Image 1 (cartoon, helix red, strand yellow):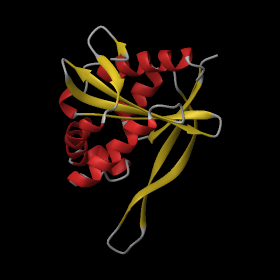
Image 2: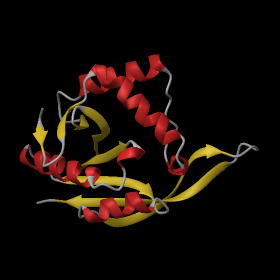
Image 3: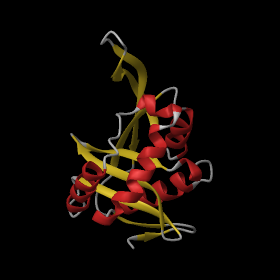
Image 4: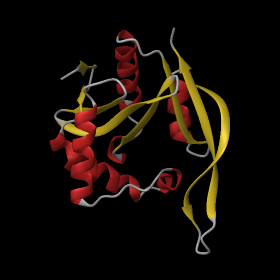
Length: 173
């Protein structure tokens, strides 16, 4: 365990977390919010390989992946990937644990931890229509700094389906 909050244990992703991450992605893929994110491949071999890469990458500070655990169950994950002059935040929690404050609790602790190792600027992107994600980012102190047209899917004619993506930033000096 790397961090402990009031209710959660937070640690680096391990290769054997792949099944838990697969469950989270399968759950997410069935959500209406999945239209605002890249599709998640849930093939066993693909997930196993990707999570093994995540686990190996977490030894440095360029790409850091955390498992968020409640009583031994991985309920979500967070990633921080270096981008120019900041670390970009990504996260996904199983819908059974939405609305209970777990994302805010874990991300607050992780951001504070990252500050202690010299990481002080964070960015995040989410669809403006993804109200829960926008609310979470704002509650963590992120501010909207811009918007962009984003597309992860195409229509039946091969045309991009766009949505308005928000660009959020958190500076902790």
